[in-house]
Image 1 (cartoon, rainbow, N blue to C red):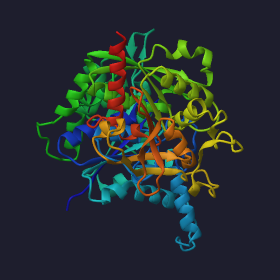
Image 2 (spheres, rainbow, N blue to C red):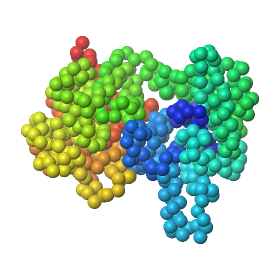
Image 3 (cartoon, rainbow, N blue to C red):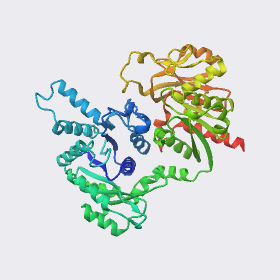
Image 4 (cartoon, rainbow, N blue to C red):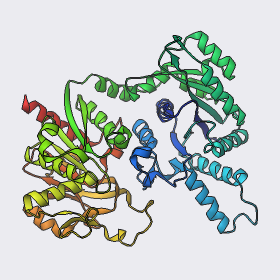
Length: 539
């Protein structure tokens, strides 16, 4: 019988070492060798999902086709593997405890005292194995958030210890990602933090099978031997992960380090010579050898933290490579964008993207960015709230509805051109209650979006409570803001365009979530092309 193999990726010494990128890179290599691979993320926080978290807390909230609000690492998994993720790919402590408590309330534990071991750990093990038992994957990679030694991570580490005992070494392994810092004063790399991290892991009953060492400098042979000896791993299982100019080079760096070979040998699986990274490497070559450069303004209110708009930034990289263009992103804080400064802050841009978001803060700055793009014929893309701001700006400055606004920002306003969706009106809980996941949209032939997609029926991922108020549709369309995409069942307006503008598109959905290395999103490809055309026209 075919047994699914499980790889657990843990981290030590420091957070933000890049467990997600290492997991995605390994998965890419195994996929390139013909294996069916998926990755899941275990997050130790008690939120049920990151949907209610401020982006400053946790970066962007990524959304899957089936409507899960998840950790942004799932975006990396999809971008690398070109395989959709789902609810099962992200597990949080909140979900685990919620499920166990609900079972206890239903009387499923037959009077037993409910404890972390075995009840919480059993729930974790069940969640880890959902993907493996589906029959869809040969290998499941599980990334465990946080660092070893954290109180929050202990139940996960214990669950992995139990699973390794149950599955055996031939079906499970642990990759431990750690830091080998360089001390400039001493002029050398230090292995002690890694040794302590591995020791902490072993105190929890887990042994690392592979060490991946983040470093700024090359690890020489003596250092690798020392790490292997003191950390109880084979020398060939000490893998160097040196800083790279782009995350998209990491799979090739891991290939050079033979990480995929070490994994397959550990599992006793055949190691074929052929690794098909042709399409991947074509992308990397185009990405690193652009023929042109464009500057696109990203107007949002979380611009201080790059992870807040991670999928948008990565979608620009994919679309840039497709157009052989380097996309320079100029982050512009919408809260501080005033009309008198618009020319100075926006005038040099080849295109403007107004980003998603929630709440009142920074709204007027986003509306000002839309106005500037519209009046100066600068290519424009509005995503979710950005699309709603485009509707408000048009209603105010073209139609003449001076006080037009969204119900979200002013529930008492006379002209709520954006209002709360009907099915949202009786909802009181905030978590997981928005319009989420993939929804159908029908495009109008001859529109900018149809030219981009080259098809009428599309499906895109959503995350919103408010919508275009259809009561104003006739008035707005008569003034030139055309509806070019609608949900076929509900008639909900999904896309607006201005016909007599070089490229002006607002979409209610989030196209950035579906952009991958091998399938750059067509809307971003068209938007970057419009930016390039604008750039070339100005010369």
